Length: 317
Image (cartoon, one colour):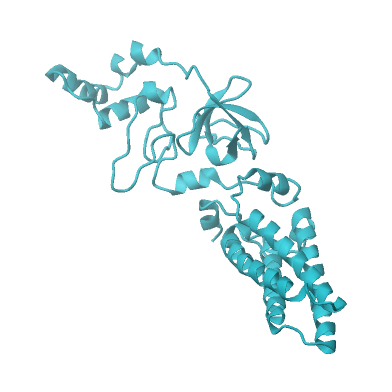
């Protein structure tokens, strides 16, 4: 189950821990305000019902919002927000309708108990709006990144490397494809030195010369004459000949001259030691990016080091 969560970018599921709430100032504050508003409405509703007639709809609102608050507490305490955030937003949207309707049915009464109950429902409505804006946004949103930076247990990111190794599609820039279409191939000039032995899975292996030879043998260029058709076979049959050496054209390939985009690292990332194409970077580090079309971006650090970086670890500036 934890492997599946890492695959889809969710945090690993944990047991119930109150420390997840205490260590998150946003959750602690909003849950506290929601509980205070619910208690004010509940006590005031009891007093108002004893002394005067009280709208029955408000009782249903109290029961419903109590269930919503409990649900938020459980998801935060079990660190499973990424799994249930869509359901939370749906329940909160319905609860916002209930609380605002209860406010409208109580606020105009002259009794102090009903006005106090309406004030409690107003607090619940305000918290619901804040929760909808938070849970309904992607983790890469600027306001969520700012809020989560204060939490003690949220300083981690989805596993880009796990998703890259467990899926059957390429996460290299521009090589995404569906099962019904063949992957688009690139030559060394287009990849600018970021070739791997397999354009589909992205697994590295072998020397640079061997990678180019395998790519050439698997996808030979259109033949112009009979001697050119035999050239890939000769390079495979005689691996020790001079055909393994990169040609003058390949050796002249350079890194992209322009990096028009700038991105900020929202998480720290350590490059895979088995893949020389990846680069490591720290949280809040600024990178220059040349292409943002895929899930792996070609980036350049301030030190001049170049490589590929997972896009879900970066945010464009």
